[in-house]
Image (cartoon, rainbow, N blue to C red; front, side):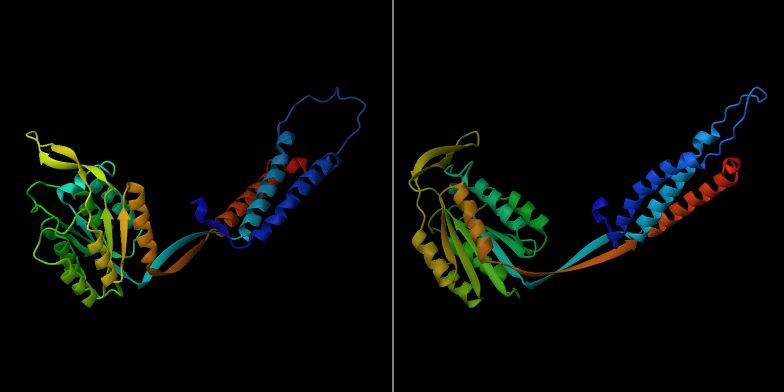
Length: 335
């Protein structure tokens, strides 16, 4: 509430500097305002004490408070309510195609590749509030997890639910299928810019659509593809089998990523290829993509002011009225 409070004419507060001067003047003049009567003896008068003379300064206090209230009213206190409307001049539609094959559970990224990816992707999604984003997952086959939408809650919930499920998808890595499904999500888009972020940790060894054909489809529909190869250089602890209790049996295996293919896809579609060897590098890649694909946003701000000076004028009037009544009643004999 305080943040929304402002004054249209704050220069009137300089008048408050006269308040200390008025107080000093009142203190200096007060003894001179008291009448003195010289008498030879007080024995004929009954000694009485009254508290009213001691309370008389309250009249001055009330008047000063009224002056302060009036000065505040002159400064025109007001509250403001700011509303914004965002107009996107260059909307971007983005589909994230995520490899969910078993190798994505490898532990060269902590705690594993898939979990690290989901964390970074969630931050990327939060950083693009005005864009439509969709999710495609693939292994030996592919499907749409969520179509492109501006509802970030739907996207984030869908991203959180992505996990490797044995038997849910055919084994393998069908890069061409994942890319083709992502293209299919964007081909009818009317956005001025269409982008696919394709992530994989292996080589294309499944599916009935070749990656080159999917790349040509992307070019035909004006879609740019950023490819990311995820995985360390050398050996990585990779799931090889499932134990009877449902846990995975891990073994150190050589990391194989078809970088030549990923670079070719990126070059064909005028995108860019990245290699994420650790979680930090993956975060840096998404940050770079975020900078490369900027959305032009025009923001309109509307400010509604509500005047609050009337309450101070009313308060000052009440104080002056009370001061006048006291002066004409309780304190009339002392003035």
